[in-house]
Image 1 (tube, rainbow, N blue to C red):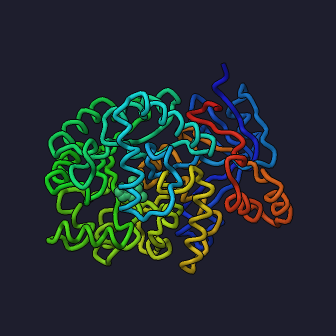
Image 2: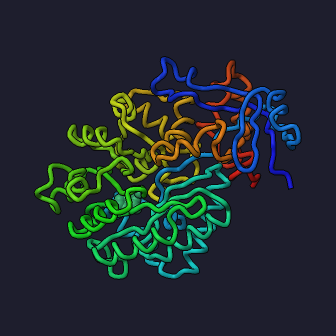
Image 3: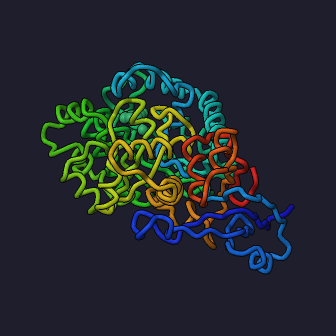
Length: 428
Ligand code: GUN
Ligand code: ZN
């Protein structure tokens, strides 16, 4: 079987962040082909140059299609797959009415396995090659997800979602059992193949100070792990946090005080931030994860992309399935554009694609492995058809440059635009 390939098309890679270059376009390099060998990218450039690198490679010609790094979804809840698009509630009622009853089912290993497979099928069909997911309180939900991803050769991150208060019977652990079970899962899974464990306290309203302290202690013992949680998503939630933690200076302080603020920390949503919180997040180089379809669907608010980028925050992009209303990172880029417009800063196509690939990889501290097309990177790729529907095709036909050709697919594209996906050098 071949393990060397040359893909021809419009290969898009980044030489810098388009948020820091003078113009977004100049952060991008477009090549005529990319060469893959043994699951890695060995180069991108002219077809002739790639052929002299890999003379035996199988050549696949994608014509006018766009070849990108696979999409990286930096904050999802795979257990919410079957209850995505649940109507009419805001965050706390939405959790109690829809989310917790569904998450209760994941103590059943067979159900966890079924939804893990379904979720990974759906995301793959949408060109997403890496996800960072919350699991449920049940260790079985972590085992099921890692097992399914491992069989597909995927780089994924997940962790047992710890909660010891303000959650129903059957969906609570304790400070001690959360520590013990998370530790056992780290030992079983972290660093196995392409799998990484994230220490996962759900958010401060569902953890006692004792549990947050236990999670902080565990992170201190395992600084190689990511830590993921939620931060300042809705105003009601923030008020609730203040009443539960009267001593805290702000929401972030409920994490900071217990050792849960760090460079490998991922803070989902981060919409309604105070000055001190922004300063501390920046100081630590912690990652904020923007979840635009969720923020509009649950009615949470408008993320300050321009302001946060300008102050040098580390920012990823995510669907937040199933608070988010889509599995698609294309739809998520469209929503990020719309939120940007509502805040007076339209994001460029080069910025949107960067957020969905390298931005998210940078948030996950995996930018040396995934999220870009460059020698040595793992060969996770997506091939986009830029005229996948009549509506998109007729608009792209009018375009006068690459970015105008790409933008209609970002705004109107769905799984029909995903022509091909590669994971670890294997065509799916
Ligand atoms: N905050 C705490 N848990 C959740 C969740 O599952 N989804 C969202 N959107 N926010 C949360
Ligand atoms: Zn979330």
